[in-house]
Amino acid sequence: MRQLLNKQTAIVALVGTTSLFFFGYCINRSNSFSLFIVYAILTGLFLYVFPFWKSVARPKMTFKQVLLIGLVFRLVLLFSTPNLSDDYFRFIWDGQLISNGNNPYEFKPVDQEFESPKEAVAAKDRIYNKMNSKKYYSVYPPVNQVFFGMVEYASRNNSYQFIVLLRLLLIGFDIGVILLLSKLLKWLNKKKELIVLYALNPLVITELTGNLHFEGVTLFFALSSIWFIIQKRHIQAGLLYALAIGTKLVPLMLLPFFIFRIQWKRLVVFYSVIAVFTILLFLPFSGVNLFETMGSSIRLYFHSFEFNGSIYYLFREIGFQIYGYNQIEKIGTIGQGIVLISSIIILIKSRDRKELNSLFTNFVWMLLIFYALASIVHPWYIIYLLTFSILTNLKFPLIWSFVVVLSYYAYKDIGVVEENYWLIGAEYIILLFAIIWDLKNGRRRVTFYSKDGDPL
Image (cartoon, rainbow, N blue to C red; front, side):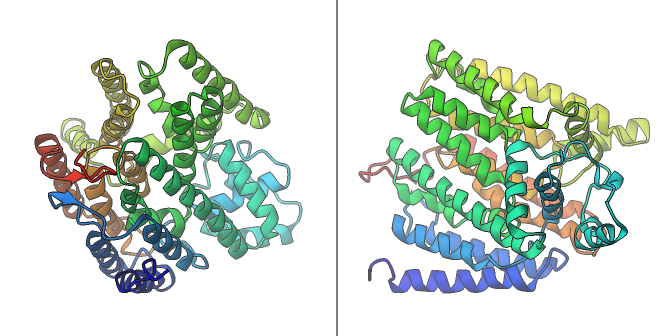
């Protein structure tokens, strides 16, 4: 017990909980200076616990200490209201539709009709006036909708109770991700204390627990699926991967990389189960044409909105110079083509590396290409790259998780989104140097230690 609660652990816990309390209850995204200061403290704390830049990267805490502090950091935010994202209002809206037996893909909030004027006023005061994307159908897949409906029903139309109950649910999945990472690290013969890269990462804590994003749920199902593949239980793996797709659509683009890494007969079983169960997940919502409703909203989202882009912004500027107006739709189509070609190239080049553990490296590079060409790169998107990179020797996603917070400067004025391209430029220049550092130095500069203490 003394080893679990030593002086070092107590100091880290005290500084971290104080910073997170201030983050969760005292600032919002328009307080960009305060946000950057708190984030810098949390990042500094992380770097103290795990000085990854050293030639020997040893966590200063045991697995149990990391797990304990990670749980404490998340519970500090339990009763806070999300302060960097207003997406949760749409969660409540969709949950209300689900809990009342309605199809969330059938109604746009702007077209919603109410049974009485009193109901309309109550709903608008509670949710509608605070919600973004009112003119779009829901873009959240079925698993999200089930969670929204369950939590909304349990909270009995109380928004604050909805936030707390949903956060408890997401914390549970987040702890599940930590435990799964520890299993996978052990399978890779790495020290499980390396879960500090996820468990105490400021981006993971603030975005998943603080702002109620579902990337942790998706990762839980995806990593569970991979763990069952390792156990050669491909039916269960397929079911879990379908749940990952049913939570967020990102795992869809990663599906081809299982080719060459699973025996063909088992691969057919795996893919077949995913296909059938994914269809079953969407089936209860098939009262409308999902391609027309949810699909149209997703297309509009990626062809109408812009935030924290990188290569996309360069293409956009070229389009302005040549055509005199924003070529977002054409750039989006070109970007999708490049992503598709890149995935084929990565798949072909990886055909000689049939080890399952090479999967994670391919995931990271594929997601990097996807987000480099995307018009929208919200900070919480980086958590996918960060999580998979923990199972590789790549460090650039970790660096990106520290600097992506600079994008929040766009919200410094309430009600206005105005990006600072100098800060975005700084974010991506740092990321570029981190990528070059990874490519050039690889395993020689920073070594993660295996379980028995030998370099991997």
